[in-house]
Image 1 (cartoon, helix red, strand yellow):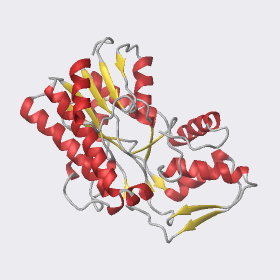
Image 2 (cartoon, helix red, strand yellow; image 1 turned 135 degrees about the vertical axis):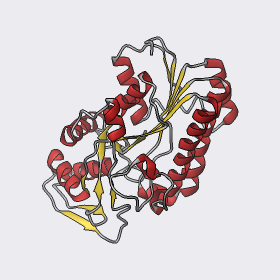
Image 3 (cartoon, rainbow, N blue to C red; image 1 turned 45 degrees about the vertical axis):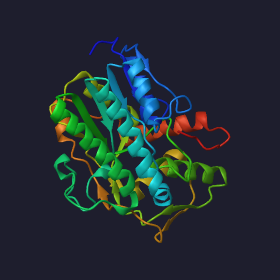
Image 4 (cartoon, rainbow, N blue to C red; image 1 turned 45 degrees about the horizontal axis):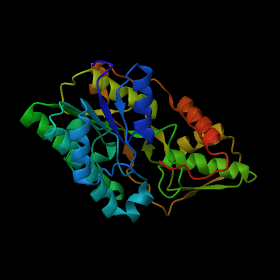
Length: 316
């Protein structure tokens, strides 16, 4: 892959897209394209088709998606399935029609069945029922994976799907109505610390196990897929290590410096009990994560403090 390769990063302003942009820039790539949603609505099929046909990128990286936690998925199921289908289908089909040879599609570990054996292997896709709390998003992402697989098999193009575990990091979304568990906890602990170390109420029992990957490590996995022709259509990206939500909370609490009580609201849903990724396929090819959890949480909290001085919601 030449450093002058023209690369379009869809969703370049989001947490993942901006990390990919940073890593590519640090490696000397100079011909990067990013367009804000205010200029290009990825849900508009004609607009996306015209943009791809005009710009003619050599590679498309699809880091654009409507994302959120359990609450957001529960409240807006139609938006989560339809908007994600529109975004990815427009990008994938426009890439195919424009003759683009390489496409990297980003999904989520929620594509795997709720009761699949642990750790989650790529082969478990479509072998059981999905977790109800995020099935709308999962169905959309599964469709993207299969569309890229179909193009790979029918047209021989290098279209590959990377399924990250739970991501976090700088430029994360800290809006308590739509954020994922780690940034939501971070904001809650921070604001409670500022409020005389008030108690913090967290959802569920704290017993589910979760795996977390720092977003810059995800970006490095994307660049790895960019610079190499991966032999299969689907790869998990994660650490291969997990911990309980309760342990996560205590780790964040310590780094933030909150000294108050944690109250677990067991009336709220836990979600899937465990979601640990089998990352042996990526490891075998030569990629491995670099940032451990405590280091990543510290980096994220430092960024939060620098960019959230008045404790306003940080939007993606």
